[in-house]
Amino acid sequence: MTIFTFALKRTLRDRTNILFLTLFPVAAIFLPDQQYWPLLPLGYQYFGVLMLFVSIRLTSIMLDDRQKGVVKRLAAAPVSHFQYLWQNLLAFAIIMFGQNAIFIYGGSLYGHELHDPWHLLLLYTVFTFTSVSISLAWNSFYRSKESSFLVFMSVITIMAILGGVIFPVEMLPDTFQKVAVIFPTYWFVEGIEWIVSGENAVDLLLIYGVLMLYGTFFLIIGSVRKIG
Image (tube, rainbow, N blue to C red; front, side):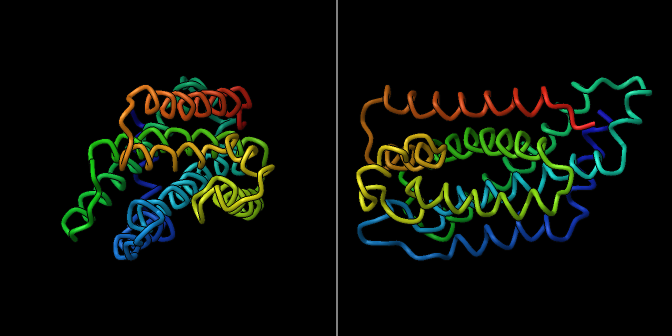
């Protein structure tokens, strides 16, 4: 687990990562409740966007390894690409899960009505998997983490707008409402709506199934395209 430990250490050494992992989530806790939309306090819906930003920041560490030739040197060591990949991803997942748990617990202490915090934590955990997988696949097409991050910020903005994170999908033209379902953020928002008012467990299983399908698809792309 040497790679796993090293991934944890260098992630937490980066001050910008600490900012994304601590200050921004804490600030999101204090965003106000809204009377009609979204159904949870603003910060708990916008947190999905923050998870995408955190994911691209964390997985960019592996892009650094490509730029510095670390992965090529690993080919001569008794470490497989699979070991390198899963130990890094495990480190990122644990860091983000901790962030999710602290964020939800902090909101409960602050007095937010979160309806079902355990289901919310599960939704965040599933979306973490999806976010990290998307970021891994995205970074596999780039050789510069700066370029990757800048372009991905635009992609996140589009996903947030068309996926119903910034405002309700119902406010979009009919054509865009039909397109919205292709974005993982749409299913993330659907998950929040189910937690607040859903009754049919099949609907929740569908939401998680779609998010896991996205995550698996992009994980395969990011894994097949070795970053060496």
